[in-house]
Length: 192
Image (cartoon, rainbow, N blue to C red; front, top):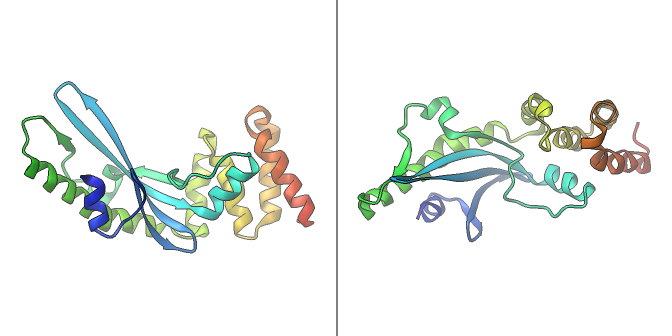
């Protein structure tokens, strides 16, 4: 029901259980609906962010993994967005009517189409995204790979090389599967 409401707001359904909003140049507004199941209710935990096709394709191809449009490059919980911080949570209980659930799905979709899309658009350039990714590097989880890929996509190949070499020296076990093919790619291109 929520995906139908998002589609009605203009989001693109690209898989049965996934929607996004293509912005431009391979940047997409990413939608992540996590579900919390409790004995008395179901709670939706809406996340929003950006999926950058060139970054994610580069990152996954160098690690020999399959590209997945459903993985965020950067995301945040919708409740953290200042524009909608006062919105009530999305929780559904068995006693609630189908009309209530439908209206809540429409409310959620509207928030994604306004504040969520505004947030994604604010990140829809490599220059805007890079500092966000850099702030997450210590958490690992693909962020160092995304920083290197972002720098590369910006044409800042010397900085990308320096970042990868420095991070590899600190986190060899974690980073080597990405760093080795990334550095080889730069060498093959004759990048500084």
